[in-house]
Image: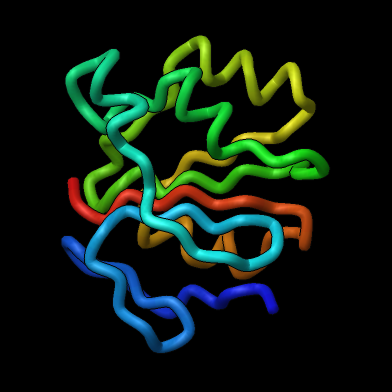
Length: 120
């Protein structure tokens, strides 16, 4: 079943009544995983820029939409290489501050994947 995002605050995201205190990735099948920030941190020194390696990990065949919760203060961005990777795979990207990304996720098509940053 597709997870429903309930609410967020600095450092947390509530999904179907369960509180996550780390960044999350939501897969096509509804599985919720802890974000693998190291894939971007080792290249950029920060998790605020999503690398091509992380984009490859996030993307799934048949995903046509990516919702990115860019943090409470809208700090996360995709690197040009990550943007190109999603574009090459015909996956539309929606970057929104995490509070706004909740509504976008809940209204997104079934073939959406989500990446949500919970702090800055």
